[in-house]
Length: 448
Length: 169
Image (cartoon, rainbow over all chains, first blue to last red; front, side):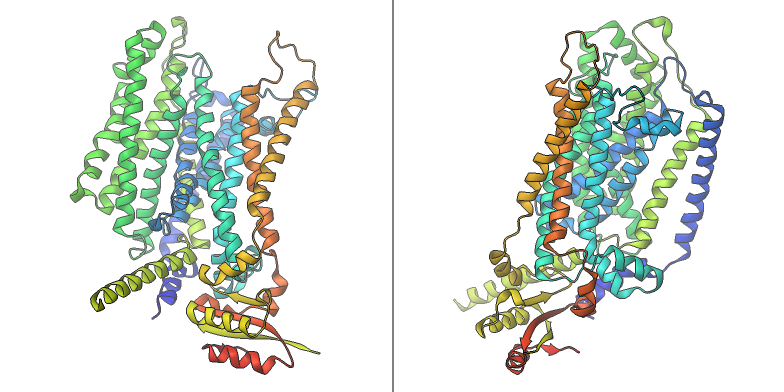
């Protein structure tokens, strides 16, 4: 069997054939999502008081989730764009898995401001438009910057996901029938694979990759400014933007590795998502882990050294107080567990790296929680201090959004090839050409 | 004089490239030769790209400029549309406005890139799919098609066959 036919067969199989696992995941995740929707309805009916949000803890689990998911979204488009710009050949099987994570993480993350604000039917107040008194939103507020940044990133990421998908949609159009065939017929826009189309597509994707990198960086920078622009203790920090971006890329790579490991196992993609892909991503994860540790240390050291009372109250609540179990769990998850696993070559195996990445995801969620909650619980006036306790409503909605993300991702992998088929074919051909050329060089050297 | 579309399928880019060269040598204008494939073959595309350079880059730049100006106009005009008291602080501060302009510049560039790409590739274009396409490319075949007048038809057919092509119905 020719390599092109084998790639088509292997990568279209998960799309065109359905196993019981797909239905099982859809049912389980769908049930959790349905429960979360019920809880959200409960919250809408009884009011925001059913959550753990009390004075002064007005930002709690929902904003933690918002920051976490926006961070996870950095897995895809940013990493894919950097690898494209750097022309890293090993990126080919990785990019689409990553780009899909971005789109779905952004969709999930951007739901949280709406859930958080309680009166969800007024969500359009987030959009810059004049109110009844013709007063426009305050463009000096980081919250309106969020709107612009996240909207730009979402639109950009959707287009960046869609453009390289067009040739694969055309392939599916020619292979599928029924409603799927019609869907792919429409979505592939009449793609024929002419040389002009290929040339322009590659050009557009290259430009998009360059444009999307600064957008991705700006998104988590602006999310960090939601905190840093206030004068609250341990929020008003100049390094918050790079700290957040580093954490976002760190958690994003971890999420990507977990997703790839699951896809590899469930869809039998061992031939395409190889050990080397996990090894390369694991090394990136190692770098980001150390960078994250460096930023965390810098952040905590300067606060401790300055010894300013309001800052120290938050500091001690994390390091020695009620939040310390979470703090040390975070350190273990983000540093103590993943670093040795990845640093030692023998333990850099697919499933071990995936487990380490799962710990990183959990650790980074805790990191977001520890940024949001302890500061609000310790405002500058001590009479106002309060501990935070969550409720079943918040926990259920949080669990529901994780299930929603998995559900969206699974549906995407069911409808579209999760690995870019044409890019893979192109990559394999380049590899073959390199082998042929090196054989020629060896042959001519022998003749000489 | 009637004309006919000739569609020939080739195995591998080398044969397809040879066919294109032979057609050019026979006097067929390059822009009248279409090569279709399931993956990009830049070695075939390059001469065409040089003859018809893409303007996507310029449109991205222009889109960015338009997006940035639109962002600034939104902030400036809407902030001045209401007599808000800001205590001698600027109504349109450059640094915070810059953040909004930064994002609108990016979205302008992204949308312009998409639109220009669709324009240059003639997408959406479902009509041509029916008249000038074969799904064989998806299994690795490369199709070279050209328009031939009734006088040249046999000549071009033999050129394409000699290059290793197989005529398609």
